[in-house]
Image 1 (tube, helix red, strand yellow):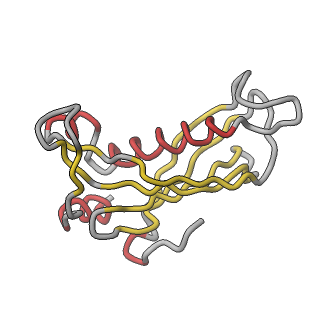
Image 2 (spheres, one colour):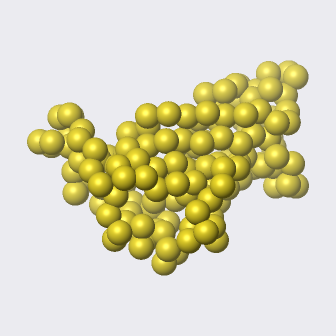
Length: 147
């Protein structure tokens, strides 16, 4: 997991997931898009948990497009394994932020870790128009501190 800034170190959200048929091969290697799907869902759930759900983002014309992602595979899994994605803010920059994720089975076995880098933005003239990055406000950071 990336080094979390001290002010956000205690802010962690978990997102439940399960390994389904087709998510991994017979050797227990999870198909990599599955991890990224879980990371994405966990990030949206994280924002909803602190009071910034997708509906609010749509109403405000906001988006948080992904501009970078990485994942390290640690341990195999099997169909039926119940897991959780543990997510923390790794960094708030000027217009971008990093969410760090760990995927672990419920018995604590770490399956993977990774990060997403996203831009805090707003549609210039409604959904589907270009997105312009905006400065991450102290109000948004306060939502995470208050969680």
